[in-house]
Length: 376
Image (tube, rainbow, N blue to C red):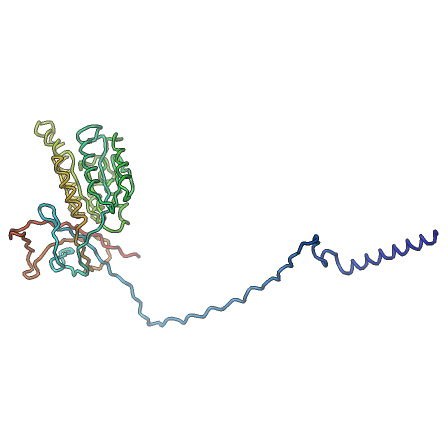
């Protein structure tokens, strides 16, 4: 019995040694049999790694001929919006291309495109609002709000409007939008002014710079006394900005009746009188050189006709385009003058009404533009 147990133990040891040697020769069981899985579970086989496709050689581009000519355009088209109004502020229609003579630096230009147009307005309402004159419930404060709200009533649903108020610095009360409620809500803030400064030049320069990239028909409606107290810009610099901007400015001068009342009673000294006269001239200059108009109402009843004139001159215009004879890119200012001529006699065009009487008219167009500068 003991011999049988010893023999069985020897067979067991021999089998164990044989399995151990086989495992060492074939490697670990896990590497040959794969991952273990339970009953009913399937094990996905690893996907065969795909080799990336060989790169495709790009076809070589044939070299350009050495004598191939190159072209570079130097054309600088100039577009001018022209409004022709009679002495009642009504737009004069029916004019043709041959009636317009455009001079650039006194040299006649050949018109390329011409046509009447009516387009929505993009207007920035720039309002002086400082403690210098617009104290709460004062006459000038009331006149300022009357003018601002009166102009808002002339806008159409398709027009765009922004409201900017300035004293020490310009502040955007509402950005350009077709939602007139935003502009009305913005003007609700015109209650208590913050500073006694009225920096007109800085406000105009900032507004023009913001509106440069806006396409289409655009204008600035300026409601101001015309005085400037503390701007960093001088009048000459502001004038240059107005000329280069090419955005028509429609200026409405405040305090006309109040000034006359004080002046008649000797309450205004010579220095104050001179300051206000200079302010009016500045407003006229900004309006004229930008292709706009200046108004100096003395009575509230004048506001409706003023705003109707602004609306007509902005919506109904003739658009002329020409290729300037002077193609030098020197960055200088080129003056533009637009006149109406009779093509038969080459004299000033005579416009008559239905009764054959001469009609006095005015031509609104920008005073010029700044030529592009050659990039080195």
